[in-house]
Length: 369
Image (cartoon, rainbow, N blue to C red):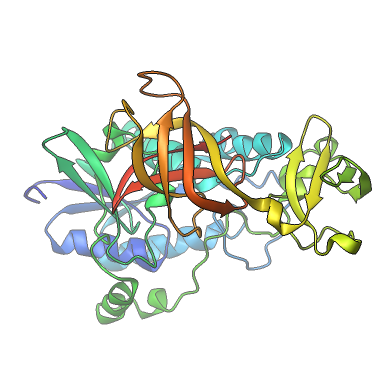
């Protein structure tokens, strides 16, 4: 990293241990640090404050206060940036639109690309906060590859906390400005350091990766968007009624309320928004070895000129699997790719993000069709 002399780094602060330690480390390195906290909750959706932690909900006020208190303890400036309109029109709209189309989106990927590393950075500049780089407590690493002249996104040293999947939609112009102080450290080390420098309460604080502060996503939808329909088997035979396609995802077994009879346990195999039906069947039908992905964001390469061997992750908790990715159009550098796995993968889900890796480097990511 370049010299810290007279350099200002804006740090996205959530009130949690990771962003706290990120800010602490950068200050210790001699940077002028400014803490930025997003405010995205606008009280327009009926989510009760039950003390549940999440990105979106009434508990945000506690997180903002925590970030403010931490900034004071660190002796740095703290600024709250209102992005409630942007979050609603970008992340929540995307989430609802995808679900009503029968898909299962990953809102965190879109939030990181467009809000946290987009609107937040832009708005801070508009507010007169002049910074040289932007940092967060994400567990990833970046580096510049002089051969390809591209910024690379790499997995964290701590594989159990690696968050490269969630940042797979970052663009080159974003990666150029980003710093991730925790990428070469483990979570255990971060918590130990937090306790050592006086942030014991933060180190012991419960963490949450929840999208919103409720388990009932239906509160985000208009009532008219939730319509009951038919469960059908793989032959198209009606075998029951569902309560609205937004309540289901590929591979789901619990909460269906129907019996498989002689077929055994039933799983969601397909969601058809056009007919408002949910196809269910035995688990064996969940395994597929091929998929199509679109809206590809290339990171380590500019595109595909030939088939490429990678490992691919079809959801955050999915174990990477060997695959070959091929452009769907000759010499196409963007658009769609075909992904062929060496072995069948369980519950390939339309709408989810798929991320391609070359060892510990992110090749790119896309959305499963």
